[in-house]
Image (cartoon, rainbow, N blue to C red; front, side, top):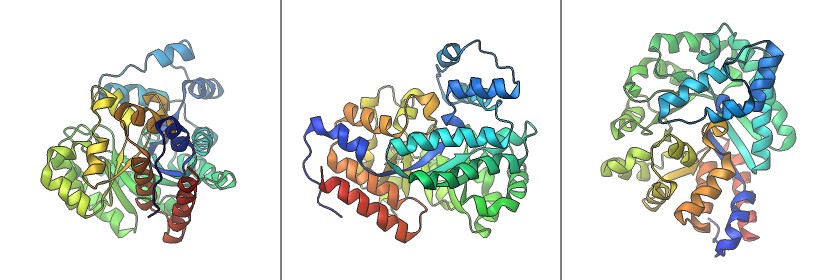
Length: 344
């Protein structure tokens, strides 16, 4: 690990913006900006219940996860053709490039679309083409298919069956949507089948749900990464395990603020997670809805919590280590990270 130089506070924002990083928790449907929603609605002749981009932006006033999900699913209704999914992903990938993201592992929610009669092939084709094209701009992008946990495990099995013909176009599966009342063990059998298929496994746990959900995601679902995980600080034994096993946590600070997981960004527990030796990372979750892409999350969180260059280096390194990139690619990412800090 490189020696991290002391970086004066006034130079820290520039370093945060410029440092190479990976994004491991981004819902592509949550990157759908109001302008693109309106453009796609017009292109596809879809009526949406907002008169203007401004009115839609004003509706982004959430009080909890469910009130966010309600508008999130309404926004996704404009996605009908493979080109729509391509345009959505490409818009995000260009922002990722601007934020110096070298690798993006992108979540997508096929059930949100197949329930509306959009074919699995249409969804995956558009997203996958955008990921392939991202190589031209220096972003290594992969797809992770997520099951909606408020739906049944049977529905997840159906979704997996529909997706397996395109197994070469996604690298893993995840579990997202409304957490409370839908513990990970509800999906034990379908995750076991995904494991047999050689897919990487991740799951949302410990955002609004209790630490017990993190334990069962690890022990029942056998996930390799915990998405969110901020409630782990309530369980010392869990904290010790997460640190010892270097289980990556894909923390999303602005999302946590917007969904009232923390009342103020100054109260976020990211420093506590890092100081306890956990492999925490910073991510944007649903950036169009939560007020910021990856660099916005870094800049605002560091300004609010007083984290420094040492923390920045650790977070970026954790993001590369916690990715599902091949070892040789990880070494290349780390070399670029070390070079950025050597120049700081």
